[in-house]
Image (cartoon, rainbow, N blue to C red; front, side, top):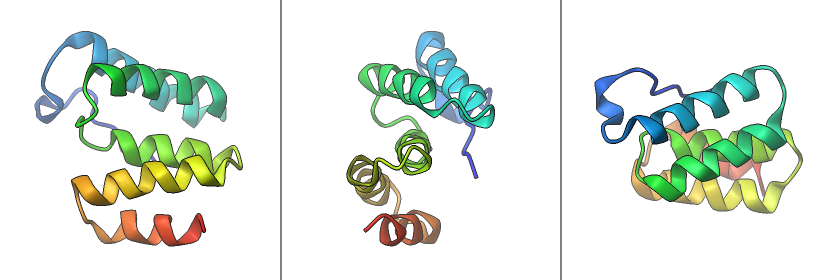
Length: 94
């Protein structure tokens, strides 16, 4: 489960942050989670409120067995949008 905001208009903002997020999603789909994390973090530095970004970052951390970091990203995703999948993933990371 990856949330891709590329190329939806709702992502808004600079094309660089969209490219970073899209590259992170592509890498995560290939199972290259460490690289995906770097791209998600770069996108987050440009706009931490990009839809789905914290959820994807959390999933990449979770798949990399970095549960503490995953929980932090899922908590941020819940704060941004309290969807049920965000809460479920947050619970699984503890």
